[in-house]
Image 1 (cartoon, each protein chain N blue to C red):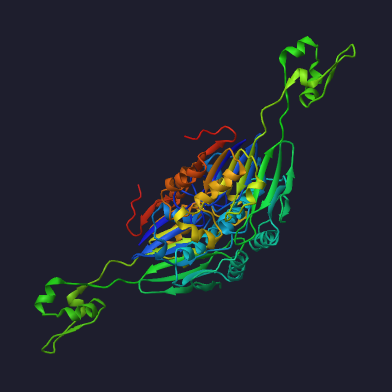
Image 2: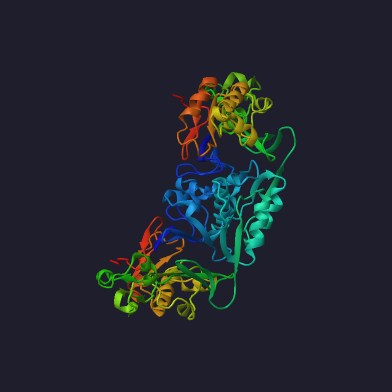
Length: 307
Length: 307
């Protein structure tokens, strides 16, 4: 599970920072989270294959999280995409998107399978081979949602010596890795626990987009490996954070601490913070394992070194 | 008069080429022509001051010429702009733009003064201190317009010696530079021609956006100093150019030759042309003073060296 930051600015992009977009790679399937202006160029720059993106998650309907979508959808079509695209966004966006594509006379070669986000509680919105994704409500000026990506427990690892010892045929191995017991040719039942060990721990990533601090957030992402949380402002701008529905670096750190996250990435920095080292320092006072989002950086979820 | 290329790709941007956007600097006033996705980042990268842009020209309503506008308009507002912005675009775009801004709950601090493009003949759409701008129809799949920027004749230069000879007071000099005769204190009329020489030649730039070749185009931009003309495809793809309403490199060169342009810039390259030197070669066979558009390049109109 690897996370690549494509954009880490808030509403005003800078020459270094593009608006919000993250790509999560889970077993070589790509999940795009938010799609600020320039996302398709950032995908190219980071040599990320467009064809592997089948799911796009939009946290809320503010331009710095969405304005790259029209170009990307159009590019998919021009590149010959026919596979349906799964789009998860606040309910009112379906109509906005369709009407804007029609205004531009954009006819996609593929279908958009739209899932409306909503509700006051976490909601499972995706359940595929490797992953479940849950949306959860945030607190912003408009309806805004976070996303929790949880890897499914991987297969168990078979103990090599047991294959020889019990003469386990190759054809039985996939079932045993999934947890089945083994019945030998003379009818003896060998318990799964005796011939396998657990696979690696499943990993998880939470994307907490535009939000002000609120206590319940931590309960939505309890024990997550990697938590991204916006930190638009440094602590001196706490009042501005409140009125604009955003978080300070300490707000983000507090949520990560309460959630018992392993590592925190802060981002969505206001353009006024040319140097974001102060924000990282402030967050680390509360949550030491904090790192800043930097465009073009990739994090190996569950295996991140914090200096 | 200086032209900066912000984007030179066609619908599919690459890691090197952003979608269409040009900035024309005329006496330090900036005129933005088309506004593909990422234009605001390209403006920052090229250190172009947002506050000096008061006029934006949109050639036609295809995403690769427009999708950067929403972010840019929003950024203007966040940066505190209050001056009206003059927007020139095909008529149907006014409604599309306003409704999309409303969908995104974007409230601009400034007014948009919208001028609708239309008609089958050239139309003067702007006349300010230094410049006139004329729109003219192109031939594309949707209504598409080119723009001709013509500098007004600059002031005449006064012949230094005549100031002393005729005892011309400083207060009279501005009028004389504009062409007035001088009447000396003893009533003698000194003809303007005898005390001034013409200023530098006024310069002109024509932006010929998405279009297929058509004969009448040349008449719209006769004798222009610098002509930008799209050349989406190389000559081998002439049939594709026809069906998509685009031009080949030779089409662009033919128009430049027929127009008697001084220099031609080709751009809007299809992503399939990784190396565009073939397109430049093809164009130069017909119009030797051809240069390729490259993102981030600035041309001094009327003073361009072609190797």
